[in-house]
Structures are given as C-alpha cells and as structure tokens.
Length: 513
Image (tube, rainbow, N blue to C red; front, side, top):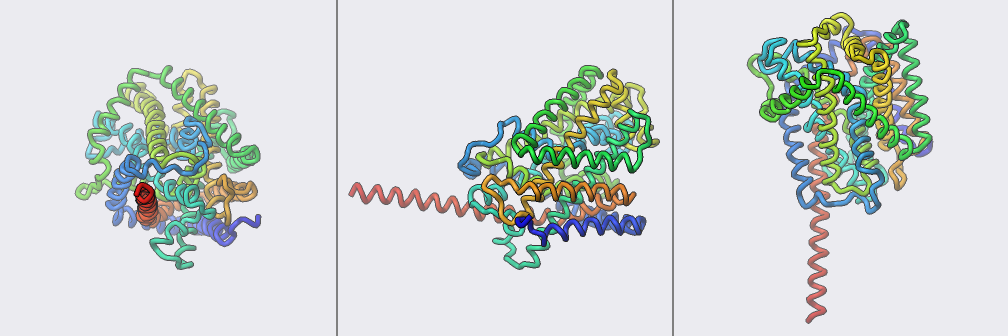
C-alpha cells in the first residue's frame, strides 16, 4: 500500500481508539466531559450553525441556477444512470438510521414536543412527523451536498489527483503544514467517529431483531458476528468493483426499501398516513424559517439544542464522507445537477420513508392502541422499532425483510465511508477517482474495528456521539472557507472565459480589417 498516506491514516485511527479506551476506563468522567463540551458548542454556537446552515441552502440554490451551474465536472459521459446516482447518494447519506429515527423521532417529539406544545396533544402530533421530515430534509442534504462541489471541481476540472481537505483550504488559510495536518486529521476523525456510532446503532438494531427472531441472547458475540458479516460482504462488494458492486447493491436496496415501505402503507391505516404526511408538509412549509432559526432563548426547553443543532453539527462532521463520495460518482455531471439531485433525491426520499414509518408509529401510539412509548421506556428505541415492525400482518416475515434491508442500507453507507476515507488518504488518485482496493479494505477494517470497540467500551457510543458534534463546529468554519475558495476558483474561470471571448472577437475584427 505504497499509495496510502500513513501520516494521516494511523493517527486518525489511533485517536478514535484512544478516546474509546479512555471512555471505557473512565466512563462517567469522559461522558460528562464530552456532554459538557457538546452543551458548550450548542449553547454558544447553536445560533450560528442555524444561520450558517440556512444561508448554505440559499447559496446552493443560487449557485445551481447561476451561470456557474452549467459548469461540467469532467468531459466524460455520466458514469451512472440518474436512478443509480440518486440511489447511491440517498443510501450513502441515510444508511439504516433513517427508518430507525423515522419511527423513533416522532415518538420522542410526542412526549417532549417543540414550540411549547403539550405532550401527546394534537399539537404535539402535528409537530412529530413534521420535525422528523425537517431534520432529514433540505437543510441537512444541503450540508451533505456542498463539499462535493469544490472537491469535484478540483478533481475533474483542475485535474488534481490528491483530494485532501487541507489542499482545498490552502488558497484561503495558507500552506502551514501544522494547520494542514490538523484539518485533515479532524476531517477523518469526524467521519470515523460519526460513521462508527451510526454503524454501532445499526448493529444494535440488527442484533435486537435477530435475538427476537431466533430467541437467542442479544450478546457481544452476536453483535461481533454481525460486524464481521458486514466486513465480509464489503470485501465482496469492493472486489467486484464500484459500478457492479456499490452501484448495484444500492439499486436493489433502494427498490427493496421502497417496496417494503409501500407494503407498510397498504397494510396499515393508509388514510391516516397519507393525511398525516400532507399535514406535516403543510406545517413544515408554513414554519420552515421558524424551525430553522428557533433557539428558544426564554423558555430554554433545550429542544433545538438537543435535536436541530445536534443534527446540523452531526451533518457537518460528515464533510469528508459525503463530499468525496458524491465527487466519486459525479463525473460528467454539471454543478446544477449535483446540487439539485442531491438535495431533491435526499430530502424527498427521506420524506417518503418518514411519512410512512413515522406515520405508522404515530397512528399506533395515538389511535391503534399499541404501547410504542412503553416499549421505548422498557427496552429502548431498538426494542420499540423491532416490536412495531412485528405488529405488521406479515409478522416475523416482515421483520426478516426489514432487517435484510437495514443491513444492505448500512452496507452501502459503509462502502461510501470506506471509499471517501480511502480517497482522502491516497497520495495520488487514478483518473477514475477510485482508490486502490487495498486502501479501501484497510479503511473498511478500521471502521469495523472502531465500531466493535464501541460495544466493547460499553457507554463509549454516547461519548463518541457527543464528540462528533464538537468536531462539527470547526467543520462548519471550514465550510465557510470552502465557499470562499470555490468562488475564487469559479470567478477565475469566468474571467478566463471572458478573456478568451474578448481575444476571439478581437481576432475576428483584425481579420475583417
């Protein structure tokens, strides 16, 4: 693996593992420290992340429909069909967390609703699915989307073969090697920590489901076996190749997930789900700016800090993973296509799944007489999700299908994380942007090892989740740097084109004379 940048890879992996070990040896102290750090970030910078994120949405839509939107990222043909392209972006961005939180968030919001609503009231029900769709909607996907533009522009237009975040920031912050190393390490740490906790959450859901199906104990051995299965499947996908591997797995998984969601819609109270979805969209459109900028400074309920700001910082921590993965699959597309496909396919796809699974959860709790909130209090959210899926007419067959879909959703996200971190730590990328297989497999193994360490460390997942939010703060400022850097590059191209046009016109004038 001569092409691997060990100076970035080893310290990043070591840092995450070290934090997990410390959280195991000193669980209460480390969790308290990480929690205090997260509260400091949201308390002092929560207002800023809301303003910056809303401004980023406006900037991306302006960029898409400006004269820069027609810039093509590479001269080659589009590598993937529109369906595959949208499907890979969607599965990379949501993983198995979407359905999990699509059920869980509305239940939490019913019990502790936003904007001064009474718990389990009509107002709380109106906000429940609305806020879930909002948190997985346009703003989050804008945060995911933006890094892909400067990365793709650097790789496909400027023909750079090293895609380090520090290289992109260089024209703005300078070329100080210490600052550059800190930026790259922070980016890798954010990706590893954020994804490791997401994978650990999915493994916990899968192990709970398998335990319920087979009547076996939900043990560390079962969780480790599921992680090992992830690694083996990922190796197979990587060896097959990007187009035949990740792309095909993504296509089939998206189709299967859509079919399963439509099945739930048909067998559940379809009328309630459809009406609840329409009402939620209306409530969100009516309150989008209120929700985007609500900080609750007087009542201080903590809702916006615990949910909205938490989500936004979490998305910023994924800068490298989503930016580089979207770059890898966007060859031949225009800037406008990248922006509109990412935001539309991502937010509409999330709204589709949340409206069905979240709507079913709200109906089950408020109308169907199913004790979803009681399941949550007794066995946690994973137990509640599995129990709710088992209430479908298909019973355990539906649960089996659900677990398989969850597995492959996370497998696609794991593939994306491996590709992105491999691209960042590769000294020189190939023309197709695909890192060496050995480097990708190394990162796949590292991610699996870190995820398994989360289970070994007991409460380490809470510490890592809090630190992801803390890591998202400097990433937010790096976004601002990338905006400035991108505009410097785009304006430079525009000036060059204008000069070429002027010289062409001047040349024609000379010929005429």
